[in-house]
Amino acid sequence: MNPNEKAALLNGKNGTARLKVLFARTFIPETSTSAHGSFYEKVLRRDHDLITYGPDLPRSVYASLNFLPVGDGDDADVFPDNKVHADIPYDKPELDDVLRRLPWMPDLFFWTDNFYWFLMAGLKTLPCPTACFLLDPQYLPELKIEMAKHFDHVFVSQKAEVERYRRAGAENVYWLPHACDPEIHNRKSDTKRYDIGFVGTLNPKREEMIGKLRTRFDVHYERCFGERMAEVYSESKIVFNVSTVSEINMRIFEAMATGSLLLTDSISGSGLEDLFADREHLVYYRSDDEMMALAEYYLKHEEERERIAQAGRREVLTKHTYGHRVADMISKILAAPNERSRKCIREYDIRRGKADQELETIARDRDALEQGTADAASYLEFGILLSRTGQIDQAILCYRKALEMGYPDARVYNNLGIALRERGEIGQAIAAYQTAIDLDPGYADAYFNLGNAFQETGDLGKAVRCYLRTIDLRFDHTAAYHNLATVYLQQGRFDKHMQYFREALRYQT
Image 1 (cartoon, helix red, strand yellow):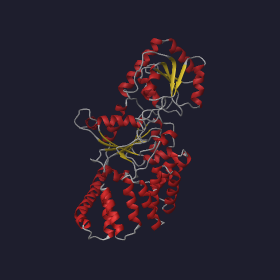
Image 2 (cartoon, one colour):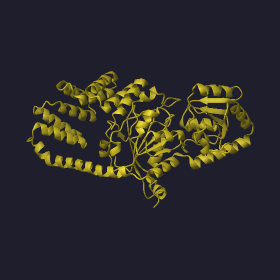
Image 3 (tube, rainbow, N blue to C red):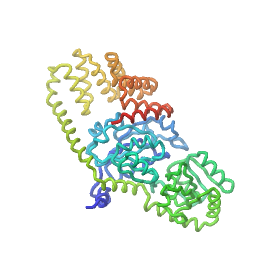
């Protein structure tokens, strides 16, 4: 079986096999400009066995970045309890802990960058190929390149960035352009209400060009997403596009999928002309004067305009959907030899063997512990083993038994706090962490866990102080830098957010 045949098989095209995919992402609803992760998730969940992993961010983070639905403001379906959940919520960077919670060994680990990046420790020891997709690789490239170096395969949305990432040391870098979702980005109306339509976020360049178009044409602008965005495109005779930094954006594919003529800058060197032919699938302009002349020409020549628009729609739907992108990605991953993955499978089996030994230890020692014949230190160690295997209630009983036996060790209170927080008893967890710190003022992990608890309760000021104290005690505490960056994001302090995320990435393993 050649690699393409294998990819077709694993992509589920013949219904006999599916990949098991662990998909790490920050959830972005389809009502957002950074929704590509949800589109990839949709295809992966349809064609493969998928488990998602990522942070449960509060609604305030999305609000601070203007990522909430627009219009009537009803986002109850997206944020039913003020958070958006992954199948496995992100709590700490260690991926080995995530593997313990999976019902199967993954065939692929896949991560997309949305607006929020989170660290993952142990990418190089995962027992499967790892891949990432970078939405805007041209922004903050030095930071994204450092992240990309941890993955076996790197997919970037912009062709011009492929060589930069390769030269910087990232492996197996490929161009994977944006795409459309035919279920959302389709023709919503046969009525053309506007001469020219534009949907998106305005910047000075776009405002200037739309202003020029408005001097002669009826231009409709709206900031909207998803179904409403497709309606605006469908009701426009021409959809206007201008890149911000010479990028191929999502608008190109989404607009063409609705069957309206796309008028876009040619974006020289981007690879766009490799995908779509001028005057056949869309229309390129190369100056402001040409933009105005072409808009006037195609508004007057309806038959020619519609012929190009329909050819563009067919081209997008037959070659440029997210289904095509996922199939292309998987084909490239499977075609590449991966000695690291084979080595990590062996290492994973060793780690899994140790985990099985822990379970055997629990079974062997349970009777003695329940009969009260063990010493206090044994109750602590047994509690830690129980926590690792998800037996939280029994772990709490062990920690409390150790304390009853007069074992006032800071580690007991810290681990008790972890277990109580996992059971949802956040107030008692905070008290346990504080007691651990009182017993050992230099206990960095207790400060870190206390910061997590304060962050969960929304007391961000106290969380910041705890994370800073953690870093004072242990300068290379990756998770403390990472969570501190998250708090600053919640507060809208983006300079601080980036400062501490860079530090987190610096110490990532």
